[in-house]
Length: 246
Image (cartoon, rainbow, N blue to C red; front, side, top):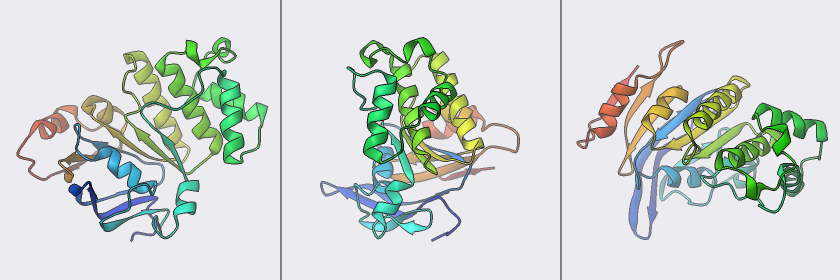
């Protein structure tokens, strides 16, 4: 294990219902880094996240959080992580404040009104909307509440599962800006997505996952972004040849 890694998959292998879903997947995500795991449906992206959360134990290899093996230190691993699923499970009959207070109470985090307002400001949720029930929210607004909750929990690591699915272009741009901002504050972010363009806009590195195997990795140049054309070409390459791009 690399003890300096915030997240590490080391030759991770996972079987589900007798089928190999992940095959010897290895990657590292460091502090202040956004790593996007890119792949199509069934590539094994969500399985990877569930392995870091301890819901799908490795059949081979290992996963670690802050240098600790997840299987051996499950409680510590989960306490270090905030997880945002594709559709956040929030209560529609409650407003933004009520949802945040309730989930913070469940997590054992003190209810601090100033901190709640600050988190909602950081995610740019319109102040006029904060007192309305979530049944009147768009998906983008719900995602903002879920991210505010992650900010308030103040974990080192964020796991994001298809976070921009169903969002309009303006909401996607806002979300990417927020993710980059969080990384700038030292958060470690692992995002799984099938959106090539979005991954290139926000990620420091991209791992290309195909049929349960990591077939390529791409890194942004200093001060720049990963080239969309390069990643798209590899994403569309059904032969799956290994690619490493600096």
